[in-house]
Length: 618
Image 1 (cartoon, rainbow, N blue to C red):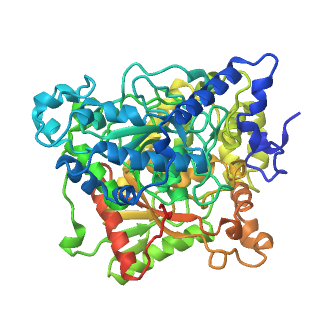
Image 2: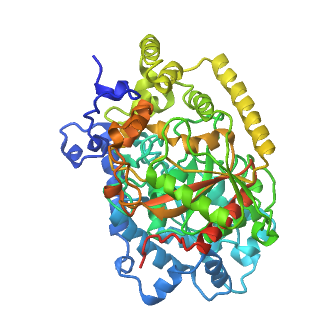
Image 3: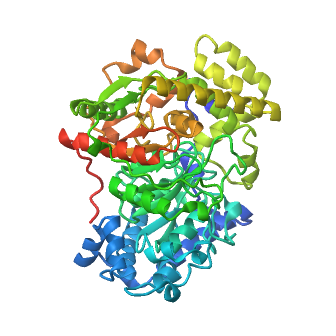
């Protein structure tokens, strides 16, 4: 009657026989006697991408010269400075990063579109040079910023910075597929606010990056683009839904990736790929003009967020975007100028609250070790680190899940074409939402004592009426108020957590970890708090092993079934060398302080000899 544990994702039933390769576009589709619209769209999109790459001049596939390697090693601020003074031409920067982008794509399948030549044709780039004034340079593509006052135009504050864009954010003339075949060959008629701002500032928007079908996933895989793999190990995932961007930045193919984050969609790839990211509060970073698989959802804010290859680059980029007055481009942005925060110069000791568990899946030894490493370093510097007991985290997550899926998954389901499927973890959620209420009530009743976490999720995971949805919004606001009160009473500067309970997952195993494992990230989307990710260490087979006989221990048996399933994919020997990050959280609209908190963490780690070694990009 039912297909394995997909319909019972929270119980410890035998693992589904669903093969992850089912979610990857198959070349056999090309030979179908009657290919569907979905199959034709996938074939067309992949052929278009391949044609764009193969038609590039041969110079793009040559190894980087010593000069290009030195250009590639420059931090963001120096790239801009040397472009503005005429020491570096944007074309030289573009060539170095285009080569890296193609190498990254060859290794991980991370690009959905390339636009290397187009990046150099933007008026602010093509017409820029030493001594060129505003009248000569002109505006950028007729965007809002192009007609603004000369002060911001003269600065060209991101001149020559290579920036890649997630395949959900509109660039005029290019698809924003969201991983759906329905949106293939449907180019955007205008560019999003962040793209307009970046082009006015002189950034080199040179590529779009892969996403999973419908976005809600822990793996970046779709029929449209295939599977994107982890830059450290191709057997593992880059994360999702900004997985293509995470892989590209980790391999040096872009200085900055512009992604979107709803439940960790930038932060989880940053954690899996060993890069830096900051999800801001809604209204702080321009988000108008990006597409969503759940358009109209406002109960949990979807925000545009950057990823970067270093904390300095991340901070510098955030600063330059805010100084460009994004509220002039995006009506949803709040007009808050950049605030300089320097907690290190102040010399005061900070108070950090630690949340060890989210009430569903305890952190794995590798992720727990990364968090412990940060705590030890901060304490050695004299900072106060305390265990923070926030309002019930699982209660907040339950509110968030109901708000997120108040439509019963209908928007995503309706967008799929015949023959198209989601990743197993996302499909599991839709299957649960689609299960008859009566059956879920029975499941909730019979698991109430043995597995209360699963029982509660069975009870709430269904579509909501308007009145039920409004009641959950009211409960969300009460929950946020309680969080604000607790934070004030504790006198915290920051909260520390793991980004996810696990390091990067082996390809095809996200069904067993489920989307519920994203609670550590999703919580702060619900609260609308700024949250940053910074890489700390790498998985070690010896340091991060599970205790002997763990799977027969009382500790394991007492875990909720979703945690027991998730721990079934934890394999520190296979995961060895994968990055592991930590999440730094601040109060709403305090993005500058969170960036500074991340800098304090890195400074403390350096003092104890812990420095993250990323990909060796040469």
